[in-house]
Length: 249
Image (cartoon, rainbow, N blue to C red):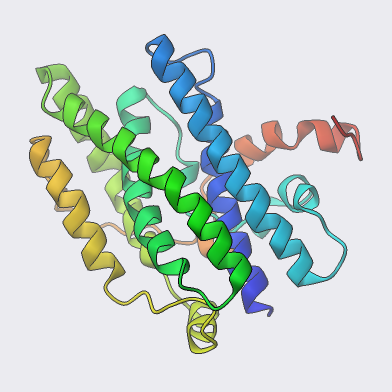
C-alpha cells in the first residue's frame, strides 16, 4: 500500500463529496445570501479536492489525473468520511453536518501546515484560510438556530442527534497514519479529538444544544465501506464522464 497516496485520497475525497453535497443547495437556499454562500463553500471544497487528488495522482505514478480519480473510480475506491456523504436534509441538518466537519478540518489543517511534505503543507496552508471562514459561518448559524425559535432549536438538536454517530470516524487512524507520522509526513494527531470536543462543546453550549449521549459509532468510509447515499452521489457526479469519456469543458 502506498500510504501517502491513500492519505491524500482520503483528504481529497472528503472535500470532493462534501463539496458536491453543498452544490446541491445551489438555487435552493433558504435565502439568496445563503444560496450564494453555500455555493461558494462548495467551490472552496472542490478546489481543495482538486489539489489533493492531483497530488495523489502524481504520487501514485500511474498517469491518473485528478479528474480520473474524481470521476472514474467505483464507490468502494472512495475513502471519504461517512459524515460528509449524509443527505442535506433541511438547512439545519446541512449546517450541523458542516459545523462538525469544519471544526475537525480546521484543527487538522493547523497540524498539517507543519508537514515535512512541502506540497501537503502548502495545500493545508491555503485550505486553512478557507476553513477558518467555513467554521465561522457554520458556528454562527448553529448558534442562531439553536438559540432561536422553539422549532429551529428542535430541528438542529434532532440533526445533531442524528449526525453525532458519525463523528467518531473523524479520528480514525490505522497503519496509513502510523507510517506517515513516523516518516514525518503528517504530525501526530494526539489530542485532536479532545481539542475538537472542546471547540464543538463551546459552540453547542452557546447554542443551548445538548451534546448527544448515544454511543453509536458508524465507521467504514476510510476503508471504502459506505452508506447507500454515496452511490446516488456518484451517479450524479460521474454521469457526464461515464456517458462521454474524455469530455472536457
